[in-house]
Length: 467
Image (tube, rainbow, N blue to C red; front, side, top):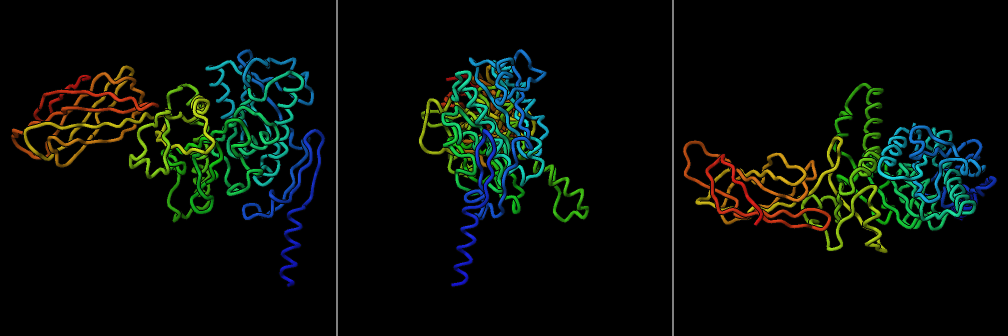
């Protein structure tokens, strides 16, 4: 009985908690669901707006290099700035202890492509320690909501024209703002933070209800302690993208050595670099996507394993979305009440975008033999290097299929080069050819077919033209 009373008292203390109230942004409790759960056992209250000192730094095409600081508290600063009420507003929100470099890069790229109000949110004073940042993002989210509310009331601006782009803790901060401002146009979560947010209620973390459209890119979605992850394992949006499976990104694995290394300080630096590399890929992917509406095509699938096995190709009849800046083009046309999970592969180095093709080769020839067949694909805007299509027993009449991710967008395919190499040595009378090659690619599963009646000796190229 005594134990039941103790448990009841503990529940009561965490469910009620303490409260602080601040002018213009309201009151904040440290009770449920903000603490007292498995993911958030420690209580914490956010600092005051004055201590955090949130700043809104505006860039436009009229001032692309030097920001104008604007404030909702003094809305005349907005009126006197280059802020345009007829333009979309994109607000870039950094996470824990971030210097803002990626925000500046993203604004630069955005303004090259579109005429928008690009605002970088600076809340560095409140984000230097992780646990403080977790608590303080509630106040900063309220500040963002207040800023948008002033735009609405003083300038007749529609919240549907606001797009919040948040990385790590900044993604949940954007969710906090969206939960306070109904009708927000879009929130993009860039690898939303995991620690203190895994499996928490939707009031605590980014959720589809926080905006008209919520898209999320996961690049380090694994548990912190067991798999070295900084991102949340939870799906958070209408569209959740998992490039390379969403856990560890190619190109980052070489930054960490085995745990048996004796130099702890050096190892700690490597672990930090490993975190940063995977976690930062999300905003690097997004920034790159701004420059190419057709890059980063993603495919609906139940798991990355199924995607790699080729079970989720090609795109359904409604097409596939592109991960990143232009994801909303798909969502507008294909609004779905349920969440969707999308997978794709990227490169290890920039440029990261890859274009997926499903190629099938129907083989012709005079004999079964042992060897390898290779293809080179040429298109209107580029071509692939020679790649292995199949190896082993080559049987005329059989069809060989392979999925590839090309480094360039080759556009509409114009020609295909086939070549084969025999594994045996000495003079051979064997001849093989590609009777038909079929390619399926693109957002809508465009199919093209190439034919030839030729059969060739080993190491002699065969050129196929469209049937």
